[in-house]
Length: 378
Ligand code: PLP
Image (cartoon, rainbow, N blue to C red; front, side, top):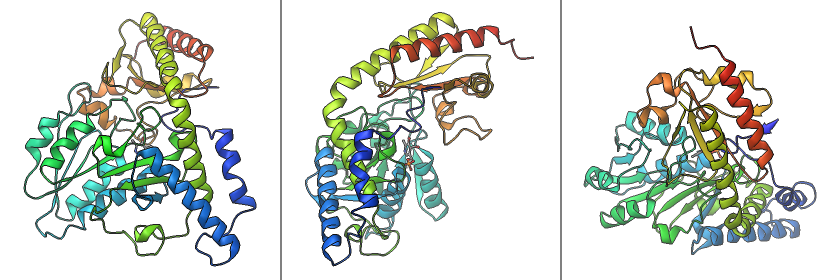
């Protein structure tokens, strides 16, 4: 099977596995334990946290809180800041219509609890206009949450420009960088964000571990009480996971620079081949501000779910993995103005570390010939 679904998840890099394995089988002590093995585990945890801090350009180890992934990090960022403000009238949150479900569902939860939520629009490329964020801010606004890069159409947002605005208004800014971290060199201070979400399984680490960067001094209420993670998150830490996340980030720092252009070039070659075979197809997302490994393609007249079924030798996606299986067309494609019929005719191909030219050739050939031989609907 040719795997072209790296935005849903990635394989665990062998080097990451090698780094984490001893912490499953030999150095398994709880970092909170008082004995020697516990202290060694605590020291390994400190080193992992320091690596994550350095990779994100953060200043203090205590600004990194490990979580079970990006979903939990997004929940903690949004619920934690919304409920922590000392001002009772601070009850307004700003977000976008193309966020991951974990952000949208959390905002929805807050809106049912009496908060007001403003959704700033995106243009037909899926880009937020920072001026729209400025207009939406009121004296009640606590938090702006805008994802760094989108999981379906790959669009990258002008986060630093949005940060300049939120800072001016003394409003917190959170960004979900789960998709961005694999392709972009992220520095929380250059970006100017207060909170930033990452997840290991999008960057060749295991599922079930992620982190939230929380700028020192940001008011944030833990969602359940406990002493771990500087009081921000309770429960025994997933030590092997933290080691893996740290190693995945360390590898990215050395390989991202040459991987990004390689993957972008393969993606462009895949797009050229598919558009040559299917001249009526079109690409979604921003032509210039897009993740290198993302290709969201609408092939009018097809049913993306049927196409995926017809191609058992390809692992590709329709919309995002989280949304697929649901009959509803993708909220991201709807937000950029695609009619339902086009949203249902959209596939997402995402490339990664193991993708080679031969994979691209195979995928383009199979998709091109499968669509050409599919009778039109009806
Ligand atoms: N945010 C974005 C942008 C994602 O693409 C994903 C992946 O599904 C998530 C959040 C959720 O990440 P996790 O699976 O680590 O909870």
